Structure formats: structure tokens, C-alpha cells
Length: 179
Image 1 (cartoon, rainbow, N blue to C red):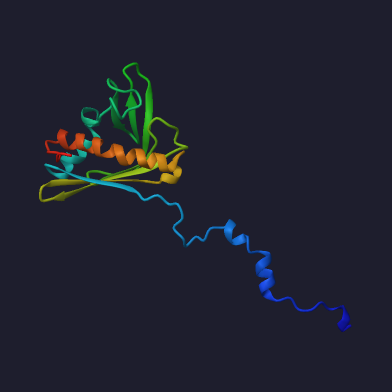
Image 2: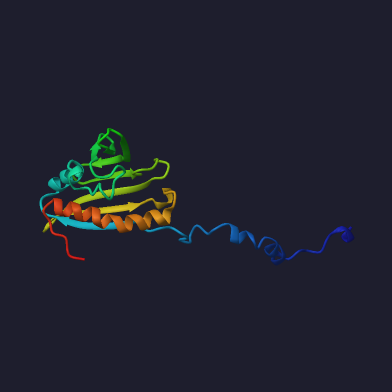
């Protein structure tokens, strides 16, 4: 009977047989291609409640719609119910985001997709806290994996958020450093 048994196979030969499998499945412990959140912090004069209201109820007065809107200059942006909406002067509307966590006057979180479908969305959280100079406004934008082109979307917002937030600072009576 011993003639019917094959010689024992060393485990190293089995490792070689499946050596390509390691290339196909990424190790979840490795960071991979994850994109870091975009984080911007500005300080505006005045109390937290005033900054929150300025940001959420008077957005149409400071948001640079001429460069950062779906319909451009002449449209109107507002927080309405659970949405952030832009309305064109002819009545068309675009949903910029859906608010899923509303904690006035401290923070809000939105699924963010201005000008696109919610299928291609990212996430924006804005938090307000009291500091000696007034109110610190901290914006964290992440969830890049939800964007149609994550790297390009992140790069675009990295460049655009400073202009948007600096407009808010000026609207609230603050000064923006040169450069």
C-alpha cells in the first residue's frame, strides 16, 4: 500500500502555487490610496451663535456664487429644512447637500454634492467654538471615496475652500491676512 501514496509535498511549494494572490488582495492594515480630509479653520469676531447664524442663515450674502455656484451670480443659496439649496433667478434649484446632523449653534454635517447627484457625494462638517478672538469655524471636508474622481475633487476643494471661508470672515467683520 505504501506504493500508492505520493511523497509528502512541502508547504513552500503550495506557497509558490498561490504567490500571485498576495498581489490581488490589499492588506487592510496598509493605508493604501486613502485621501486625507481637507481641514480649514478661520476665526470670526463675535459669539458662536452669531457666527452660526451668519454661516447658515445669511449664506446668500457672502457665498461667492459667481465662482462657486451651480447657477452663478444672481442665484440664491440657503439652508432650508434638511437641504442646502441654490435657486437660480429663473426658479431652477440645485441641491448642494443634505444635512444629516444639525446641532445649532455648535455644528452641522452634510452629505455634500453641489451640482451633481447624491450618488457622487462627499461629507462636510462645520463646527463653531468660542475662542478669545471670537468664534473659531472649523470645516472638515472628507469622504473623497464617494466622489466620481476622488483625487481631482479633493484638489479642487483644497483650492476653493480658502476663498469661500475668507468671504465668510469678511462678511462677519473679520480681516483676512494678505496672501
